Image (cartoon, rainbow, N blue to C red; front, side, top):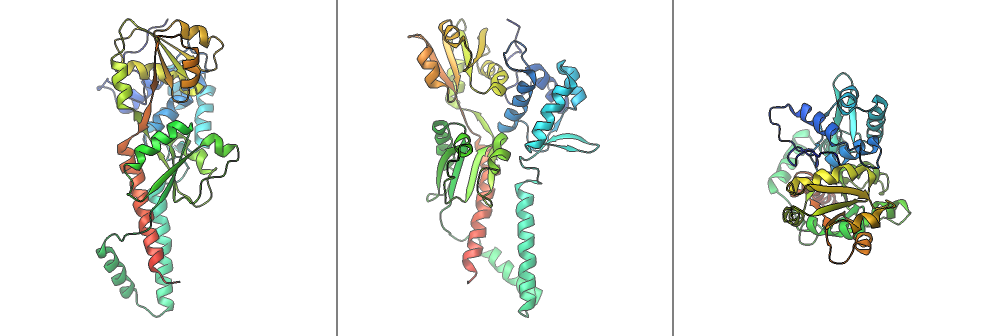
Length: 358
């Protein structure tokens, strides 16, 4: 079995220990180094997963520069066409964007200037409409300005509760994510859940809905599945505290088997586990669809499975063997920095609409 990166250098999101390198160099080194040729997953699929998951975890934030196609292909030892195809697919999905003469950067998920810029443009249009209407009614701009300033000075006004919808991969884990988000909402706000697959299958989107929340790397996809006019917010995720603690307690001599669901994320799970269990030396990975999954699980002491794979793993795992889920939770920093500002802007918008007589 090839020697793995040390836990501090392994890619799990994008995390590094070599402080003497520039951020761009570290990203290049870790994207290239995390590709695992021993896995039954094409390198292009792995690369896309590395970038998508880095975005989902907030380790590749909006505006982060990515290596050029040539740099990444040469460092990783893969075909230029492979990297170019991955970048093209990510551009089409809105996750990254090319800036002529400047390189390739992480986008905001839908090829726009971001939620803040979009909100500002909407407000600017409303301001223009407000001043035009005031002029038609014979009111001077100074009168309108005074009214706006007075409203701003009054502060927030109580309004109706908001209803959010969380769109995830699996209904049970999505509900767990929603429960974490609920802790940051108002006492009367609610959040219900559905899945990307359910929406693709034609299931009706839960309405009414004020804000849709999803995984950062699936934001562009989800935007095409929700009714027009509903803002979609992508959140990054971090490993759950319980998961980190359980990994640290694994016996150093244990044979660890990892079961992944999505091929594009298979390359991430091994370094992700080793980041919190650097003392374990015997680790291998299988896809949940691997034909030898039963034989694989019969040879491990500890099975670590991706969310959504529990039923299949526990069915095949011999009695007496340890099993644990590699669970993620919404990053509370992302909730505060990304979701809550959208909620507050929406509350303000609702208040404004309710205060204008029909």
